[in-house]
Image 1 (cartoon, rainbow, N blue to C red):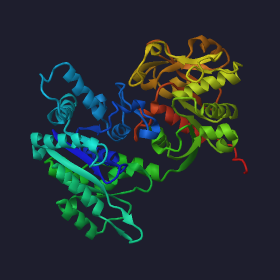
Image 2 (cartoon, rainbow, N blue to C red):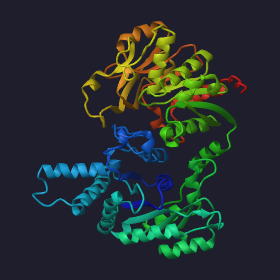
Image 3 (cartoon, rainbow, N blue to C red):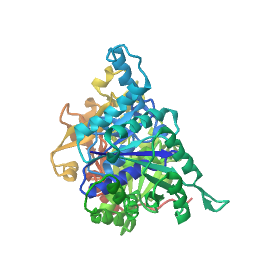
Image 4 (cartoon, rainbow, N blue to C red):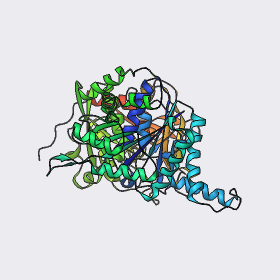
Length: 539
């Protein structure tokens, strides 16, 4: 087993996760089995209770673990199927240590960061190695070198490197090389300081990823290599890509990063076959067609809030040889000015998941607009609940119909809390989470999309379509096209006769990959391409 640890310095959001995922892609294409994991220094047990503005999207795994969004990159860029073992937070570490202390497992010893906390971290690495196997484990350390909360993780991997053997461990450090416009030059001092901080801890990276907006000239590379104590070929330029994040593996391969890693870890592998990956990237960069799809949400200004949805649309677009032009629409703006000004000109409308009532009426208005104008519509999680509420109000005539999440006293609770959720007291990790088996009903658009009766999809919700209103909804034309195998909960709905009006309670975006786009996204993009958009209004 070989171990690669990826750290970052100077600032956050350097793209460590993308760099680690891209390296995993290259190693996997060399025939290696690669496992990935993320260590997050924050004290939350997981990001499940965090506001998207705090931490972006919460990515849900098959086993129901609510994890960091970087695990989405890991699963999209590789064939690995991750579990709760693959995301460790300081909250989980300290919770485990304290539970052991309360149970007397430390036999009266004083509990300290070293060795008890660091041992807990090392044990997670060993557990992943033992249970998941593989040739290489890539571990990304979240945060920035120098952060107080990240020190136990850095100390743990320093110790682990000694125990595992130097020939089996590789440290990669990503650091910023900023361009100072006034001086018209790249500055290496931030990278030097970051490397010095790592050396103080006892970690000396063998590969340095220089995150930069401009090409590194030979002098800059030499300076980084000199202060980083590495050969110049182990300084790798990581520039912003022009078109797509899926270019990153190709750019890193051009600089022989995967060759260097295999050499340093004594891995004998063939060169990677990048044919399919290049073909996918070419379809993303040079598509034949173009389609405009609006995503109507409440966190729309935040790029990472709907990350997996944007990526799934990109995958489906490439599959259909089309560029998906994503138009982000703030649901609250629709509430103020109406849907026409924001939604005219779109060929598809998508309502993503979310929590709380802010922006709800804007989403309902957008759904009605799509239904009445015949625009392809796709609702996910809350988006399905919104579609049911809109239909109940405007087709079934149930005035003030809504969800009990928004109004507990509503006269028509067409969406209500699941029975088992009513007894739940704690918020974290208590929703209906992870993979559940769904039965797709025959003679439905959903069955056409999937081409099979039983599917497995990932969930994250507390509310569902109220059983008391199912018959009334279906009598007015709404089709419940899929139900959960356990409990018969409504999992998908559709409108027969509409160009494309499909919604699901689960999150299909978590099961989409570059060369294997999710079938609902494929069908949605196909329908959007066939739709002739209404002209945009004149301002």
